[in-house]
Length: 239
Image (cartoon, rainbow, N blue to C red; front, top):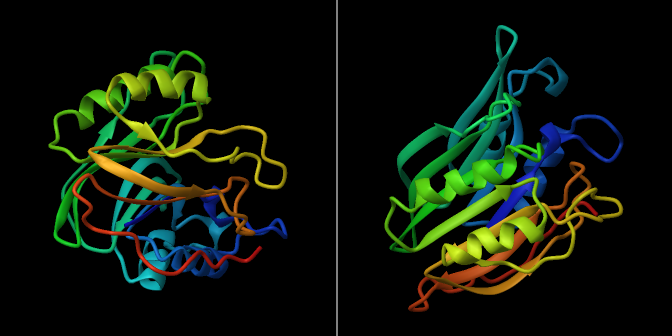
């Protein structure tokens, strides 16, 4: 199956303007089975009042769930989205710890059935604050540990490998190996991740898309018993 995480920066295009149709095309081009998006707008003026979750869901033909992290004004909702080419069940949007009272952060937990195989998934966007991000990561691992394997963690963790690898490794996760993902034009930091437990990683890349200040992480994986296998085809982006 193809798994993707992408901090979309509310669909900001390379021209410096929000490009929701471009965002939808890029997401459709991933041909993902499981797709997590961060920094998603719903009904925001800066994004042309569009519902970015609905736009991407239509373009990809995927089921979708939205995890609201904040309300900004009367109509604007901001947070994370999770999409799947299959059944999404047992959806929970859970608040993560804020020990220094930073920006509210949430995780979307769900059970996704793709190709007859159920996967427990946690999609999130963690704090960049030094005293919050690591605490939130530990909390996220604990929350997903309540769910049956195989398990999948994906999102913008805002943490370097020196923090992420020990925590996820100790919990039994394997992290997809990618180059840096931020900033998109000249990446220096690796802060976007896909990590699996009870699954086998096949390949990983961080392609240029022309959308956002992050590069996505695009991963091919299968369950430990080999189901479901990798999908044919490849990414078709704007860059």
